[in-house]
Image 1 (spheres, rainbow, N blue to C red):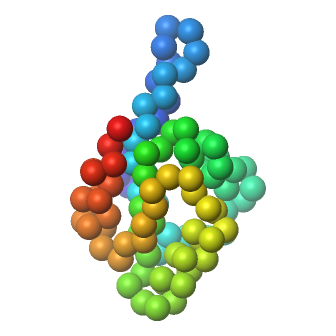
Image 2 (cartoon, rainbow, N blue to C red):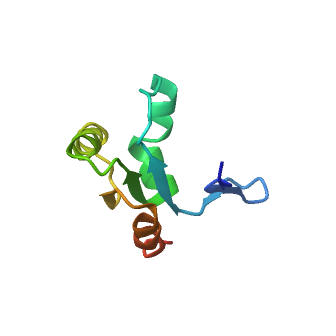
Length: 98
């Protein structure tokens, strides 16, 4: 499992300084999320914490269909793209570092 970093940084008890980072989510073998997890990675939280979203999907027509369905439901308010190749996704995300 790759290392993950939090996007929130505490600022001496005076609230939060939010450092927005790009986010890569591999949905190739994803199961439906429970409501709490879905809420955590959607809406204003997604916009506040992340600068861009790349969804890693299967390279099949079905994988693309599932990725597009996920985007239609989530409607992220940040730049978002579907990728079948992880290296291409990382390259695109690196262009969206805050």
